[in-house]
Image 1 (cartoon, rainbow, N blue to C red):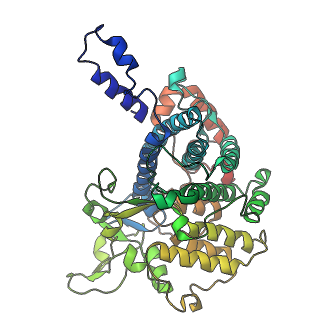
Image 2: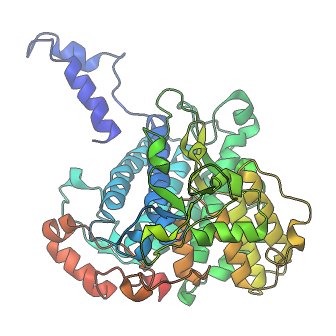
Image 3: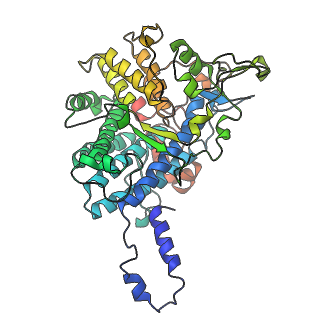
Length: 487
């Protein structure tokens, strides 16, 4: 049930104590009753619910498929062995559409209130969620989606190209709407706050605008393989004009939800212990951090122990999709750090580090005239400091971390910068093929990383004609059916 419907339900419940006619007119004209929902009422539930859902999916899907962590013991099967069920994407489909409906209502409320900042925020959130949705599935309903109130229950699908064309244009427009001279008056803002300091000189609105443009860069890069999108020219225009297109320039501008643990702002893990129970750190993830001599090891993982648990033996994981029995490991492997999901904690949407890695890639490709090495090092430093760790002296003198001029080196560090950031590691791997992940004989799917979720069965049964058209357009409904920007 969306928030607007909940509000209406409470109003209706409050009316049941009256008879069918007595006081009816008074109840329906009472100026103290809420007749219209404000955009601010919708903002925080959208931010919290979508970001925390994404954080949980980063854990139970991205960590497994991208060799960050895995279930342990694990006799057979599992996402880390590319054993992807046909229902794997159901919660993603359902949650994103649920909150897209509320984003739609937020935008309508903002327009009704003539509030350009909330309208721009709603447009930004809509682009963010639709990009996640289409990158998980490919073609999805957009133009006719979330229009059940108009009697549209079998929405047509839009192609991914249509979706990206729309949301990129929307982000361009949102950038022009933000007005820091007009404060966001409809309540607090979970992402960028509305404290006296944050609203001074429109600071929070400026940060929202930076998020809008930083997201624009992410999505332009995502579709850059499709030359018809002319992504590199637009990205160059944006980066070369920071006044017109401000983006993140430091960590405290990043789009990161701070989960305090106070009130309703709680960890999505009802029991933090569930995050670490029957889990192990993946060898690929930890071995690289060891090679980097990286301070994030202690933030992300616990130390391994001897089989009897009496002696710590440093940071040591186990291979994803390992073959053989669990008895082959004569140690207790490193686990995930429970503090990551214990409030106060964070839920990552997009970071300054990612912006620097985008610039590093463009410079490495010769698109930007700036120095790729500088952007690479800025990205690494920001990614480390984002987790309250300190970049060690001489970090870039290490052969494993020094910039070597390759896209592979940039993407390896970007992989760590995207840690716990919804599906982004998976999306970027599909775009570039980096980092190069180890393979084992126990991997299914011919040892190929799956590239999408299958459409939910309910879509096939309740919207069969439009589903069939989408499958024909996509070239199939399988986990190996590449989406448009991958082809």
